[in-house]
Image (cartoon, rainbow, N blue to C red; front, side, top):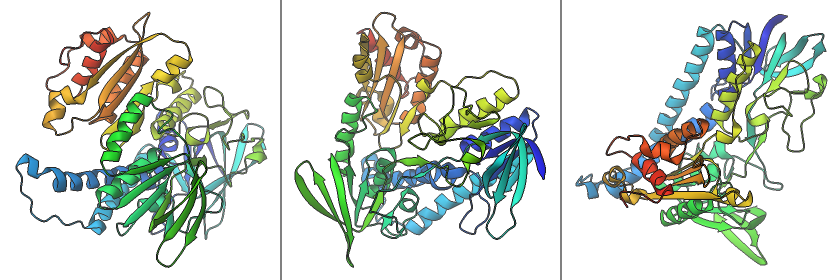
Length: 475
């Protein structure tokens, strides 16, 4: 039986980053992962690289390019003639990117001396300071390994709806929603959160009629509502159709279509679809780990309990990413993985969950970090707010992307920035400056005094900070 200083269960962003950092710090590390590609070959990278962040962004980029060529090229004085969509080639490009990046993870693990063990790990028990695990791989004998420390980084799986099982033909999860071989004429997505919005954007750009059904009454309740409502207006104008406050009652399969029956208040409604995607959230992926063998009990949401530094109640066992509290985001898992690895080496890193940015890669993009205006009001916090529309930003104008705004929320007493919300082009990149500002406790005056390149999209953030003090210049 092989013995290691650390075994990481899961090779997604959190797991492989933890394994790499621990190996850099001199630990003997093994990383166990059950992910496989279409040919059943080991494929590290977790949901993010294989069937989540990366493939979705590949299709978002391709579909956005298609939409720009068909809808905007003429306005730039470019005649393109007839434009043809080849979905098979678009999907092949996506798969090529995925293969390159997952192969890159394998290379990095090998380069840093991490023993990669393909298969599904489960706990056998604990003897003294050694934690024993078994690795199962289909068609092969099990492998027993042991370690003084174990990090659980098994990520999450799509949540299901009772009575509406996935068939991955017409009723799909998010993975199936990324792998369609034809553009559906009528697509219905249950769930208007991050996954639903991004998948809906892809297929709407490529020609689908898309309806998003959301159980909650409010659009993106975790986002600042002024910005969220502007995003909803723009997305509706782009062709996405939304219904809120619904309850899905049944899905009937017929030869021609799917018939969805749902209620909205006292009203009973029906909707026909060719394809249904369920994007109703994700659940911690802990099935098959046999957590009870080491005394771990998930909470009511299926999450593994941890302290502020990702320690579980069992000595030597840590958990990170989607299986613990906090947002289910790849970059959050990465930071937790690195932090745990460094703590094992005697360092004292901290991960500030309050300053983890959220991003939705729609058109325009939506990103935010820190407090919303609603949260400040609920806490009784006096704030000052600065806003600046991209309509008044020169770079956004020349890019043909003038929709959206930057909103900065600052403490009324100290001017310290409490939250930044960006709806507009490259919001996913612009939000990084805001994260730095919050981490270093910057004031709106600090950002307003920093010289930003001109013309640049980042000037919109500077102008919004000027607006906190009522001295916006270009509006």
